[in-house]
Structure formats: structure tokens, C-alpha cells
Length: 182
Length: 166
Picture (spheres, each protein chain N blue to C red):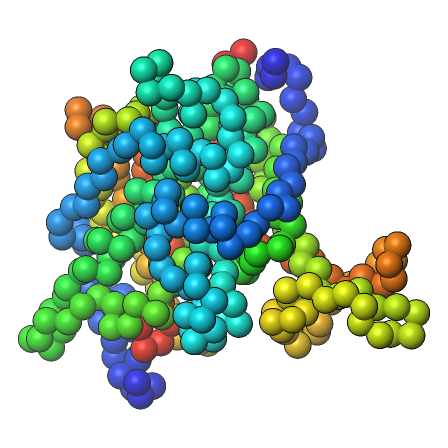
């Protein structure tokens, strides 16, 4: 149960999703009515200069509403009043999508959040000699740009197989408001 | 498209879109199967959204994406304007359209249920151009009502159109 007396400014709620696949985007296209083929057909996406399919802009947004629906236990303890986000960068198959919301203000029974969606895109794993021993879709299709590197979004970390190169960037910043019943 | 024409069209859009109603409406017949399929994309398991048809379900909040897309595709891409005495589509090249931002306001709104017949209307809000890259930004203020005239959501779409698209 979540009550207004339980929540505090600075508290963070979060979900993570690592199941973005071509099949899931096809299911989303059917259910949402957004059948633009750049989201489901690699050949057409490549012709549009995208190097491969991209997730629908609003697809990621569904994880923001889900985060709040889960928080208020599906209307049992509160309701979602408003969400407002900017679409800043593309989300692709294989990305880990992290959705976080931080409480910035509490007024009456209303709770205000800053929302942020971050994508983690694995590129490749190299051995001690710098040889690529495993490549992910982003590495194969060249999703990482010079700008990503210039902006310091491309990072590395040690993993059991070697050194993982990945990109971390904000896809969707924004705000949300919920209202708790008690 | 030449830079002079881009500038001329940008000025035309800024002067002629803001505050105007988008002609026509779009409609969505809400089906049980679609609501369940939509919720399942997000791994939602609560019976409130994916339970049996007999017991009754409601749409998860994310389903607002469905009618927003209808508004974008049917109302925005189908919109015609008159420029220099000639009719032209709002979008000269739909491939130049980007989704710049999205707001959903559910204040005072009722739930969406299977069998609902939704009507979607829209009007233009603020319209501006970023001169550095000549991207046209336009707020599309959408209103979605059910068959009883009750509001189910008030989405705002920020449409971003690259040069050559408007």
C-alpha cells in the first residue's frame, strides 16, 4: 500500500526492460496501429538512413505509464494524472531501457516526478589484445556515431569475457504527476 | 527545396497554424482483443487490463498511444491548407515528420473500455521554428471523447518537421 505519508521528496522508483526485440515491436505495431515499416522492416529502415529498425517513439512511453500503474497498484491507491516527455534519442532492439522517476514535490495528495528513460546499448566485447570476441547488433550495424563518442556517451567496463563497450544515453526526459487516494 | 522556399513556408506555417482547428475528426472503435494485446506488450498481468471479456477490463494508460497515433496519421497527415491561392497538404513529405514530445493529461477523464467508440479532434497550439536547423515545431492539442461525450484523455503531441517536409 502506498500513502501520501509514505512518500518523500527525493525518492526514486524504477523499472528495467531488456526484452526489446523485432517480434515485440511487430506486436506493438499491431496493437498501437502505428504500422510505419521503419519500426518493423530493416530493409525499409536502412533505405530511410536508419541503419536498422528503431522502436516507435511512443513504445518506450508505455514503460513510463506502467511504472506509475505499478506504483499505485493499478488504481488501488492512486491514479496517474499527467505525463509529459520529450523524445530525445532513438531506442533500438537489444537496448536495455531503464525508466526512473524521482519525486520532486508533494502538494496535498499530488506527487510530482522528474522522469528519465536511459538506454544502455551494448556494442562489443574485446579480449586483452583488443580483438573483438563478441559483437552486438549496435556494433554490427554501426549504430554508434562519432557524436556519441565526442559527447562521452560511449563507455567500457570489465565483464567475465573481457572488456565491454557500451553506450549510455538519455532517451526520454520529462515529468509526471500522480494523485494518491490516502 | 531551396532555403528561400523553406523560409517562406516556415513563415506561412507560423502565421497560419497557431490556434486553428484541424478539420475533421478521427474515430477509434475500442476492441477487447486490442486492449489485451496492447497491455501484454508491456508484460502487464493485472486482470484489470487483461482479464476476461465477461468480467470487464479497462485500457492501461499506455493505450493512449493508440489514439494519439490515429490523430497523427489521420488528422495531421491528411490536413490540407491553402498557400498562395493553391491547396497543399500540411506535410509535403511525411518522411520528414518526427515525434518531438508527448504529453498526456487524464485530469477529469474516464476510463477507456472495450466497445467504446472514441472521437478524436485536434487543434494547433504553439508553432515555432528553430532557425539554426529550420525545424518546424508545432503543438497538436488533441481531445479524445467516448460515445457519451466524456473525455478519456487530452494528449498533446509535439510534431517536429524537418526542412522540406512543410
